[in-house]
Length: 266
Image (cartoon, rainbow, N blue to C red; front, side, top):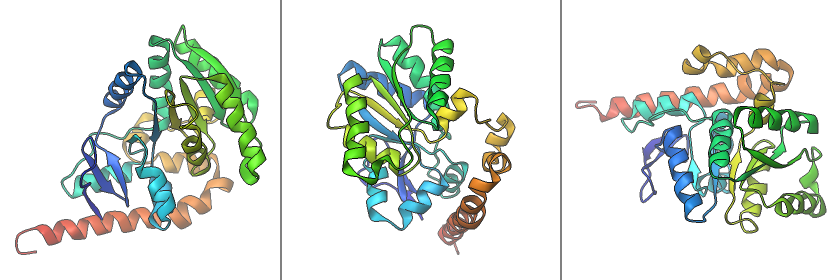
């Protein structure tokens, strides 16, 4: 269920059916900074249990995740699973944290930021105010909250892409949910080869303060899902309780079994 990714750059490990870079948040920032200096953009995907579950049964989604320039573990079960089989990931690296640290990097390098999604447009504007308030000198070159099913037609998707391309941002934070945000980002990469893209789910709403984040102790304990479930039970109950928790249980049980079988005499 987990193995060292053969031939994967930067020491990737396979966990939950996807390949994840064994990096800390600081290492992500260093890699992005080097790429900026060299004029290269990239795509960051932050898989959690829900994304891994979707990728496990859909090869196209698995390729969408694994083909990213950086893939970081947003879910604690992925970190635990990697640890169980002796190929540990150094840390959980979340989109909710990266939106802040990458904004700081953008400010230091004189790059602009574009916020895409996050809910109603005023949410992205509030997030922009929060990010620029924390990082003086940061310039937000655009915010846009596309209609919920903007990509139901080629014309709708094209209109969103055109707005982003016209802004020529240095960073795009796409909070449209997986896989919608990541498909859009993959399409935009050819138009904006020097831009860095982060698929960040709810991170824009977190930054805006319209959606509360779990306390630090709950994040460390892998209980952020429980906090979010309590905050949005109607939207998240089925996803977490019916789909994600059983997948996480099977993932960890499989890793425990594989670890036991690897022991001498196992």
